[in-house]
Amino acid sequence: MEHLQGHWLLARIGKRVLRPGGKKLTGRMLAKTELEGKDVVEFAPGLGRTTQLILERKPKSYRGVDRDPQVVDIITKLTAENAPSIPTSCALHDAADTGLESESADAVIGEAMLTMQTERGKRAIIAEAYRLLRAGGTYSIHELGLQPDDLPEPVKDEVRKALARSIKVNARPLTEKEWRELLESEGFEVLWSGKEPMALLDMRRNLADEGLGGVLRILRNMLGNKDIRARVMNMKSTFHKYSKELNGIAFVVRKPAK
Ligand SMILES: C[S@@+](CC[C@H](N)C(=O)[O-])C[C@H]1O[C@@H](n2cnc3c(N)ncnc32)[C@H](O)[C@@H]1O
Image 1 (cartoon, rainbow, N blue to C red):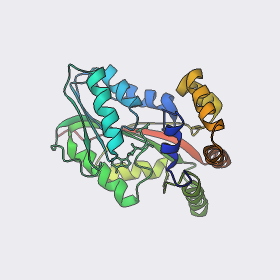
Image 2 (image 1 turned 135 degrees about the vertical axis):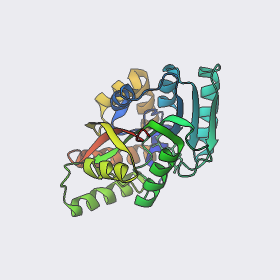
Image 3 (image 1 turned 30 degrees about the vertical axis):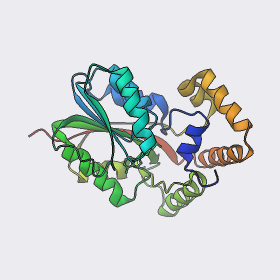
């Protein structure tokens, strides 16, 4: 329990929405992403909350890619049940090397999965999204951001270290300018970007994201286990301490049309 990555710890106690800007930022991002009739690839679908939203938008096909076998099982089942009439799959692969065919997708979506990669890892995954997309196709991301753009380097370091200690993941959030430059340097054009507060563990956000029943389930699971409670309270206090510097940030970018 002590070393479990924060998102899996939260998933274990019943949290389903595991991205920093919550359902609201996902909704804003998907509103800017064309999905109906499109070939869609989702990187790191996790527990499948966004997968369901994608399927509701009637894509032509859905392919998920996650490096966790449990996620692959969850998504394979979920897609077969929710969208029996369209081709769906979920493969056990790293998003940097999906094994999928080049230029076979119109939209790639990936949330809360780039922040935890090194700079090289981030670049490899962004380059893979680019390779998978047809010209004019879009890549939508929702990640952890730092603000403002001119946040001093020592503060960035302090935030990264505090996150690593608390969530047990080497999270490397970037400022809006850094995310933008990274995406542009891999060949993408930015179509849209949006932000929401980083409020993963705030009560109001959880009521919005998980519903009252979900919040009660999470509280019950937390109260029943001292170690889990200590970990969650530690994460909450780290997020609170750096709430001014952290945000949820999303981008929709496009592979230039030929
Ligand atoms: C914080 S969860 C986010 C899940 C989901 N996208 C969401 O927003 O609720 C991180 C997910 O990313 C997956 N993941 C992390 N790095 C990955 C990589 N390099 N390739 C594929 N999946 C990855 C993990 O297995 C996990 O399912």
